[in-house]
Image (tube, rainbow, N blue to C red; front, side, top):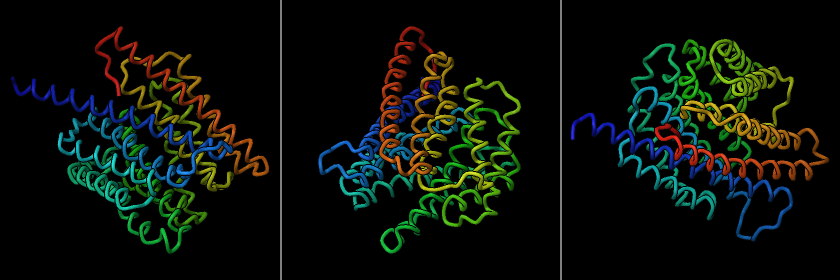
Length: 363
């Protein structure tokens, strides 16, 4: 077998790994989130099903096994990034161990051990991709340092979890924001061929925004969100994105500007709504469009976006209309259920399409 054939086989195996991990973890994450939505809506579940434990498992599984494999898939398409078989196996076992641990007892020995394994793979990848950090005006150049900055937030979270849980939550928000702004979004922006900003500018607005949404909500740090949203609006003026994906990104950018200017007050529920909208609407739709040679028809895309918007609006309503919290909790659970069912339908549609038309590249 020639060297080219070996490389082609490895690429095929890695693509299948991306496909399997992302789809399984996506549905697992959504089901965990859906159970949490119905818990808040008043549904009765067995006593062993802890909302707090499910919340930890939901968020960690989403970041570990959905977002980062999608980021790596973007790198693979853009830069020929490769994660060896051994590292892939270690990563999967780390994800499984952490998820089971979080569902069983929250932050316990097994969940911490699994999360440490996952973090170790992240840091290894950051080191392996360190050459990207030397590039100028390249979206991918932000990721290695972004991973390291996120890792720096972990010790304060661990120390403060029992001493000062409120401050620990703020550090978690900073940690998640750094990963989204410096790792997740740049990966998909690179595949959308959006013009990258100067490095100092994106580092600045990302760091300021992460602090504003987390540990230091100083008003002037909100300028980071304003700068981030403004840059994206400027970058979106060109391109050939479908109008629904472009609109989803426009809405996200405008929302960042409104929150940064403090026109819209940022609190717990608005933050949950915002992160779900960011990852489920513009990010996921963009990844779908990137990795499929043909996009599902509009009659499949638009209901999905409607369900995402409905769920996120209901979650935000918990902040704006606290007197009707139960009704908004029920609405978010209903829209979440419709979203999961529609994604199952989408998956069936994709599988059927691939059988009819082979050769479609998908993630």
